[in-house]
Length: 181
Image 1 (tube, one colour):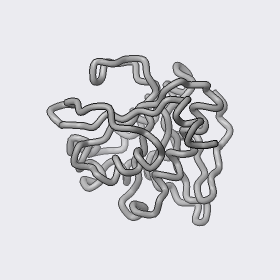
Image 2: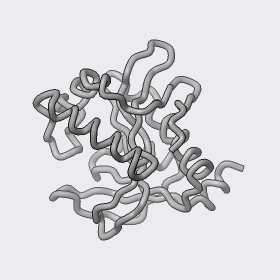
Image 3: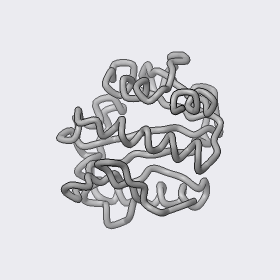
Image 4: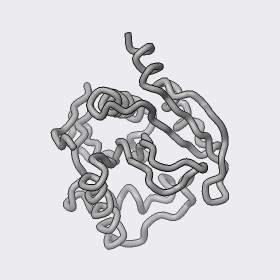
């Protein structure tokens, strides 16, 4: 994996580090952040350290994982974004790359998710030479689905994730190239 940070106009995307635990706790202990994620916020920093360790293991095992997303102007940790190689069955599929993002509420509605998603699609198709990238969103999370669609992902079907109806979207490299001519 190329672990060199990725820069967009307003964001710095870099590997998630053990020292990000306080910021990750602030993110993942927030009930508002977990509204569409099964409403199960973390309770302590030990849980966050486990998540960071798991993500860092994904870097080694799969060559990719979620990265810290930093607002360049302020240097603030706003959440995470990135690609994740899914090896457990989800929607009857396995071994695919999922695009995702999770930001603190004070950074919602600023276009950061769209900006990060576009950067990750570019990275996935140009650096990793992927042929398809998947995105999933809680059916009621219209803002998240709108981000995916603005970036070119197209609705495929609905599926159940832990008793939650979710939308499954995808984009092929071929379609992405067409959109980015």
